Length: 146
Image (cartoon, rainbow, N blue to C red; front, side, top):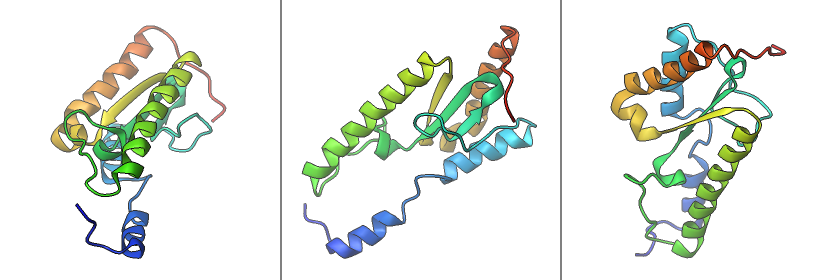
């Protein structure tokens, strides 16, 4: 199927897509902050996690269904497939590598699909709090330079 937009129009549309501070990320951050959980959003960590709890060595990624290949909602691009299919596969491979690297450095990595936040934000927040609680019960608290 041919694209209905010109190359210039398509580029303008694609530039508007956020890679940071997406609506699902902001919803999760707001919910955690409202419950009194303080986090960081900037770090030098591999993969640039969306939410970081340095004290608990917890890195959270909010993955977009299209960009990261959600098994439920990912769609195959109808135009320019020769570009997009390898690009999306590289994204998935990069995600696996980032998760493995952070885990090898002692970080817990939790990945959340954007649709999970849209469907049940409360359940996602409960999961994050359960991970934090698990770290607390293990008695592992890391000193941070904050």
